[in-house]
Image (cartoon, rainbow over all chains, first blue to last red; front, side, top):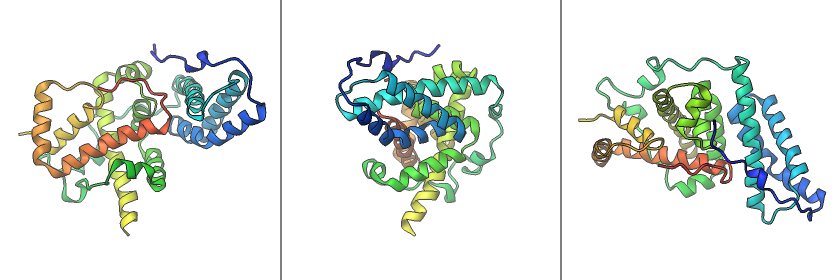
Length: 207
Length: 64
């Protein structure tokens, strides 16, 4: 199965920080946990549940942490396990759409001409320096909106690969698909996502 | 010669598996000559990094 290591098992057990402080730190990170969970689970109620579970686990297990980044990493680590569990349950209960047929994708066909070159209207434009992009709050809003608008299978595979950081090998085992199929889905997801972001973000920035 | 559509497949797969030297060579050759594909390649890389910034360092270190 998955080769992830459980970050939270190594959590310190000495309690030095007051409970109130810990609660406060957790509520500060909660919005980010929630949007992370939402992108994976594609269901608000389930995302809320996953985050709630993760926060409760963090309160009971995590007693002391030096530094904010280590703490956040640890809480995100807990959430990742909750999400994977819930995704497996969603899949067992047949809540997932079947994965797209790889030969049938008009959205991608429309980007390219018959000869394989970009259509003029879909040619990628410059987004500027990555650091400036990442600091732009609007970019992250558009990123979220575009993730939500992806087809289910594209969004699931993309978020497992790029947000969760699983290898395509792990994703194939998790979703029970062939690795080649996984690469095809990721290629399409990236093309759709970049087109959506460029449309929603750059056009607005320059307007 | 490789066309843009195929080039975008390779620039995507490059983020998920090691390319063969032949694939690397033809991709590099195409990128050197094609502005829109170079932008696309930068955007795929940016999206790859964006995903890694979303959650703080909980990622497996499996970058190719």
